[in-house]
Amino acid sequence: MIIFKQIVGVILNKLDSILNKITNLSRKRILLFVYVTSLIVQTISINLFLAYSPVKLNDDLWYKATGKNIINKHAAVVNWGDKKESDLYTNFNLQKGTYYDWRPIGYSLILTIPAFFGKNFELAKVILQLIIYSLIPVFIFLLFNILFLNYANVKKISLIAALLYLIYPNFIVSSLQTIDTWITTLLILIILYFYFKSNFSYKFKYMILIGLSLSFLYLVRPAGAATALIFIFISYFASSVKKYSIGFLFIPLLFLILTITLWSIRNHSIFDKWYPSFTNIGYNLWLGNNDFTSRFLKSHLGDGTSIEAEIIPNYDVKWSELSVYNELQKNSFLFGKAVEFITNNPLKFINNTAWKIIGYWSPLRVRTVAQQNSLFKTIIVFIFSFPIIILSLISIALFLLKREFRFNEIKTYVLIFILLWMIPYIFFFATARFREPTNFCLLYLCFDLIMSQYKKKQILYLNNKYTN
Image (cartoon, rainbow, N blue to C red; front, side):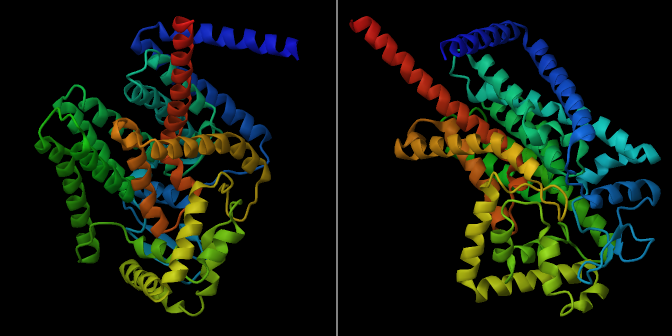
């Protein structure tokens, strides 16, 4: 046992020495180190995963089909049907149809780049995403440099956080996936970094960058863009120190309004009707609010089963006429059914909401591909996620018990953002995948808890030293 402790001590001292050497580098070199390390770790992980993994990753074919059709058909359109010429196959009447505005187009626009490479689409997609997603740990380092600014070893804290995120099981294989989760995470990090940075040294270009990121986020995850904008205004008014006039916050807002206006004009040219958002809102609201939602959430808390495959068969025959509805009609019909369920079944709605919150925070709810239960992936993700979630909950509990909101503004803002991000998903449909873009916030809460305890021990040690 003593030998084991000595070995661990030697390893920790060596790692600390390496971290000290890295943090002594210039800021640009540290960022380059994090980015290159991310590229290397992801590349190795992807190759190992493809060679040995017993599971398949979640791959949303909708984005892929849209991206390819933008290049090949010069239109963001998807034909969802049961015929061979359909872009996507479905045997559900409720889903069949031609769609122009069903899903946000932002991530599909990124996939137009690998679509140029034809048969080499998958390889080009992985390389492109590898280049883009490796920026996520870089912005975690930058953001943590601001969040932990009051700590003397802020560089080391930020570097450890970035490197820890690098070994997060979901992230290391993120470039293989065709989902919007990771580009959403990157955009949120960019927005929060430049917003917090503007509070210390205001520059007009920061607002421009926030506006551009917010606009693209709207085209990727509209609820995320709304959340980010609301957070910016709330934190501005709550801040004890204001570095600039509120008028400057309207710059990002104008960018967002311009994007929504342009998208509305595009939709009007297709539907001859003004529609500012995307037409799957009613569909998603209905999936999260019907007689079978809670049963699904209870039965499939820890696997990757698709909610559509479990719920739609219960309604598909009864609502077979939806196969001839256009997407606006479907959206209106399903939105009405969801609202009808909520108003007529308030207790069931509350029960559904409770299970959505459990599913949202569960370290077990791991999505792979539809109908594939993966104990392997569940265990791997659980080992990483469970300690972070538990430490975060302890950090939140201490925050409330000690009423830290009176003096800890940064932590208050982080918790406000976590709450704002969760709210839309508990009304619609929530799984742990939708929590992903806020996992860096949980990482912050863990580090805040650890560093605050470490600080207390240091104070006690110094008090004992000088009093004895």
